[in-house]
Amino acid sequence: MDDLFAYILIGILIITPPVVSIYNFIGLFHRFRNKVARNIIWAVTAIVGVPETVLNLEFLCDVSFEKSWTEQLYNDMLHQPIWIDSYPTLIILCTVGVIGFIILAGTDSAKVPPLVTVLSMAATYILLGFMIVCCIQISNHTFEKFIALSYILPINMIFITFNLFREKIMEWNGCELHNSDDFGKNAFIKKLNESLLRSEKWPLYAFILMIPLLGIVLLILILFGQQPDAVIKAFTETTNWALSGQEGPQNLYYDEHYLCTVAAGGHKKIVKPVRKGIRHGHDVIVNRQLMIANAFENVLEEKTPRFHRAVRNFYDKYGFPIADHIRHNKVACDVTYFVMKPLEWIFLVVLYLVDVNPENRIAVQYLPEMKSH
Image (cartoon, rainbow, N blue to C red; front, side):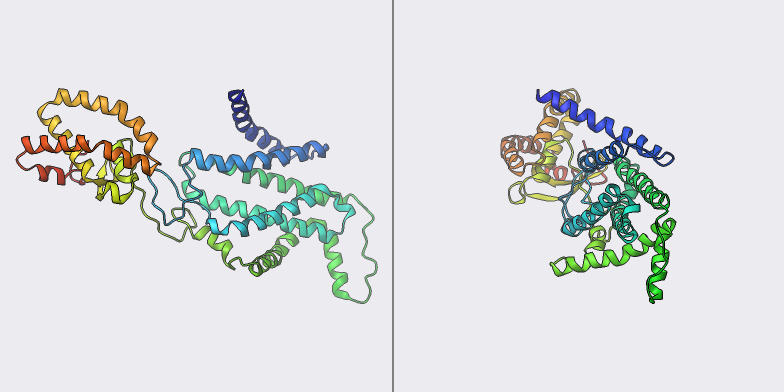
């Protein structure tokens, strides 16, 4: 039953994006009469699109939303694209945008004051602007892994926003009851009303109003303790993204060699990392246990190549799964380090028996000029 539910969920996540994208794209050229069905499609776009975008980045693209730019990452993992401390500010801004969008989609612009419609459009611009900046932020990784899939939701929101704004303008123009006969002696108010009656300029007015609306929201957030520059720092307080302003530590290679995993993943006081090394063109953390094991393998390869191949095949068969299970667990890495201690001592004895300069052989393991195994 659980498997069936999982397959259904995966099917929904795979089928929904292309279906709603085609529907929303058609909306650019065709006005949908059935607003209930249209609103359902738009709701599905957001309800499925938001978690799917997050899951895509986290599980298919190895983006860690919890790891700040200061933390060490391994292999192809990527730091958070949005500074986590800015989440409260961004959530409020997005909420304002969603409220504006709901007001637009749920009302007839011919039956509400035009200023309400324009302000709702301005709020929608804030939501759309956030999505566009997010797209810019990840743009330098567009062609890596499945990053490009993260553009699906913002592109659909652009389609939807265009469709909605056009609909509001057409609703207003389709009603002949609007007039601007007399607004008293205040010429400014009369001029303002006449401007608002020209619905084709509402998107422009909304864009202009978005700036003071954004300022008001941010001012309120500052009063509640949020940083005044949180919106900017949301994207600059990151590393390795298009708008990043920080330089985080270079990723270390955390490969399937489980002794490499132990050296990099265990507690430093226990596994005692010595330095960085190079393995298969990637940086790795090296400890003495790892260097002794690799030096021992060098000896096997030189003295008994057939036996070395058998040992390597055995290690590849059982070492990779072990590394996969312990790579994210420091305690497991520590335990593996102690389990390997007897073998480490045996390897060391063999090295001292067959090599004139065993410590030299150990010391040069994983250096850039050496060929790693």
